[in-house]
Length: 234
Length: 263
Image (cartoon, rainbow over all chains, first blue to last red; front, side):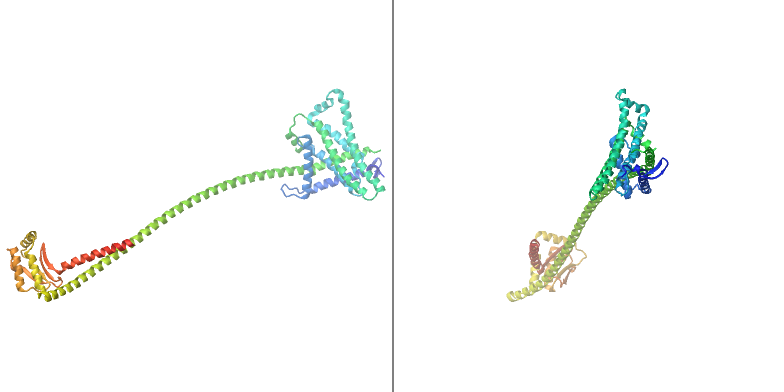
């Protein structure tokens, strides 16, 4: 039994290998993009809308409201990044009900990649909001002695993000695998249901933590909501 | 090793591509359509508020029209009532006038009938009275009625009051070429005519005796009558019957008053 889908290799050419993580990631991406494209082809601004549009609006609106609750400012600039994190992780975890499917989030490579994205997104949003100087100054807060600790804190939370998601998803898959060999009836089903719940919670936690980190880096005394909105839509 | 660097890089690229694709196919369209819907709803709310305002104005206009209509209706009703009342008064007055006219005609007819009746009564009573008196005189006093009438006329002529004698003289003195008419119901014998002329000539000496003319008047009710312009002297039964008629009129007037009071 493989601990991570990275070890399930379908095709290899030299050092490049096409493993299950990439395959299932593309599957999830395809489901998301094609599904969104199919629904958003025929959007209606009236009060009579399709079920698919209704579902997407609920999801987008829910994510936007969550972001606004955390950062207390318009969610426009953060919505694509945070929303994609949540939707990708959530769908990756939800699809684990399909037999044979291995969630990409069960791969430490994927979670690390996502954590690295957050790692780079934090300074990008921070610099965009506060400028390079303003962003770098926060590493010297409350005093320059704290600089190494702030840097270590940044790295450690990236590792924590990656390992938390990987551990939870991988453990769920592992538990189901173990229980299948021990008690093949009922227990795996219950654990699968529990896995769906924990998968959603992990997606939510990952996205929320990423938002919190970005918000902490982007926090300014005064902000201009109109500017934020224009930046996103412009 | 749990972390494959190539897979990490590929996943980062995958994720960034996914972010770009979802931004293109999900977040931007959905956000835009939601904003568009918000604007649409806001516009609809604004239009609804405008329409509500228009509806309120229209309702207010209708309310005012209704009040105006009610006022006009009340005015028309008042005018109609006044017109009806006036018409009723006119009709009542017309009916009263008609009743009064009918009553007057009826009274006139009654009066006429009464007069006709009284005339007839007077005539019949005069004839009957004359006949009765004639028989009474004949039976009791062996006297002739006509002779007694002549005597009564002469007596009255001889015993005229002084004032009346003066009036008679003045009237006789004014007679020149006209005839002096002495009418009677019956033919007066020549002897009686001479007696009458003798008395009259005493009253007016300048009058020619041929000026006096004796005639018989059947319509005169049993008596003799002297007619001179400005003077009249007569003895007839009619005088007595006129008293009877006056009494009867008094009785009838009293009966009419009683019937009117009883309604």
